[in-house]
Length: 546
Image 1 (tube, one colour):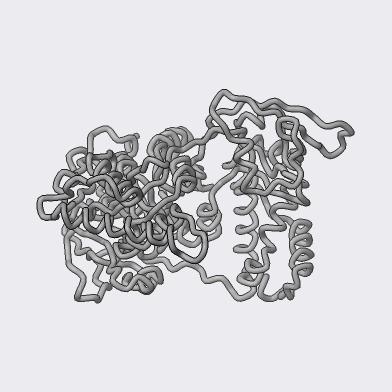
Image 2: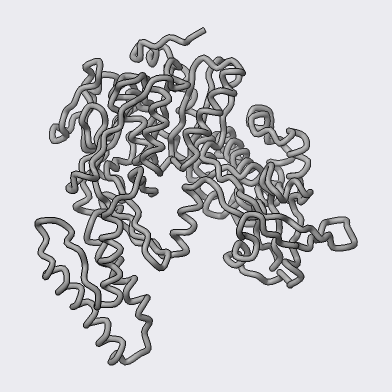
């Protein structure tokens, strides 16, 4: 589950960094964490750790790594706190930074190692590789005149990524070409999008936007998508946050601010260190303030997703539809350490506009990870939230006076249960049939698909059909993987399976996220959300500007 962070770093970062550095060396003093902490106690415990580390290093029967012992100790320390305070090694922290900054510097290809060879599944649309003519199924056999055959998948990015403006030369083996094709690529920032799809739902005036995480560019991406959809006739919007595990707190606030009129509290935080407490108030002029709104959530919607859906619900701005969200009401702040690693530390609780903290109990972490403590209701209307029976959860009221509850996630205003995959569909998934079919199809047909749809994802999603020839190949792969083909079960789930195949193809050709594949497969919530706009508009008392 992706945590979300507070919007700016404070002096506590330096304090924590010094504390951990002291644990590494056992020789430098630490600053006082607060007026209540005793500095000698902190120093004594730090020295104790250093003594033990030194004893192990000198006397343990086997050779051990001090850095590995220290990292294990840090993980153990953090594991006694809440579930979302974690240690990130330097390489992991680098990857996380790329994800949430919204770009990385590289050549822009999605690849797999097939028969020991780097095989391009798809170049990123608009990226440096695509502009130079690199195509699906091209094989990279040399990098900077050195053989790339036999490289491990994890080693490939180390050779292809680099500083923006630097160059890398690759030798391409292309099907049908007798000679290798040398291509020199100038590395550049390659966007990592948080908006996977934005399109008009066919036959309606409803726009649809899917957001997979809250990164540095998320609000700008949604704002731009909204402008384009308005030009295409959008009068209402479905904002899909299902399987969105969160991200940056300031982006959750900024996105909610696009929908909420000025002067409203969107979210506020309370920290033990009062300097870290924050209140976020909406501004005027959001691009989607007057747009009738339905927000989709489910058990995979967490943290920043819950800030947005909680604000929409508490301020009666629109309708929240789907299943109860994850229930994470904690704020993490990342503290980067001298070696590039980081500690992501919980520093506050956040509260929705009505005063709710939706954080579930994590006293028993196994139950927490198993999603226990969420209010799971039967399918149907829950506009007044009278269906919620847990008397231990505190009550609050929305701006219009509707009762809502804290302590167990965001419970939707209209509950729509996700479709449960049949045993047959589960067998297809476990056997890897979808993945293998998708890769084979992209390697064979990916270039033609891109040319047919002019690199237009919206056109592809609205018009592409999984035909009988594709299904015959799909069935053949299932049989190769020893999955007994059940025609009756297939007919019962044909639409879902075909949507899942189509979703997989978007992830390969358009590098959409796995979260979007899951959301695209689950169509029922989208259709129900569209049908509920009259209720959403009634709650929001919103009108569309003509």
